[in-house]
Length: 111
Length: 113
Image 1 (cartoon, each protein chain N blue to C red):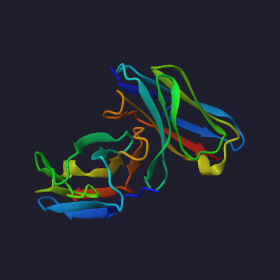
Image 2 (image 1 turned 45 degrees about the vertical axis):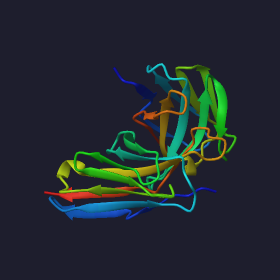
Image 3 (image 1 turned 90 degrees about the horizontal axis):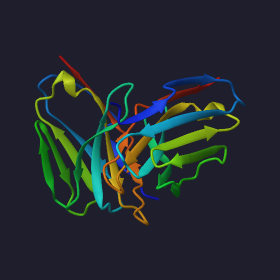
C-alpha cells in the first residue's frame, strides 16, 4: 500500500495550458504539503494545509492554487503554465508537525 | 531569511572510503533532519536531531547537531555503492513553527565499487 501517492507521475504539456496534480495519503495524517524541486535538486516548500486549512503559503505565483477537499487529499492546480514551472513537484504529509512523508513526485515538463 | 548551506554539492568516492557532508546556517533551528533521495523517488527521512551537541548513529552513518543548533554533519564510514544517492539536510522551527522545512542544496554522493 502506497502511503503518499501522486498522479500523474509524468506530465508533459504546452505553455499556457492549465493542469492539475493530485495527492492522496492513507496515513491518517492531518497536514499535507506541496514542494517544488528544481533542476539543481533544490527542494522548496510551496504550501501546507492542516485539517484543510491553509497554513503555509510561500511566495508562489497565484497561478498555483492548492485545494484540499478533505484531510487525505491535497491537489495542486496550475494555470497558464510557463517554461519555468518545469520541475518535480512533491507532496508530503505529516501528523501535526511530525515527520514528513514524501510522495514519489510528479515530473512536470512545460514545452 | 533562513538558509542552509550544504557542502559539498557533489562527491564521488571509492567503496570503503569515509566521507563527511556539512550543513551550515547562521540561523538556529529547533531540529535538523537528514533525508536521502534516490532517483525517481521522494526524500526519505534518515534521522532527526533535536538537542545541541546531539550525536545519532544509524549503522555506518553518524549524524551530529552543532552545540548552537546552527549546523550539522553527516559522516559515512566505509561507504558502500548502496549509499549512492542525494542527501538533503533540512532545518525546522522557523518563525511561527508551522512545520516549514528549510532544505539545503543537497549533496549528490556516488560510491564506486
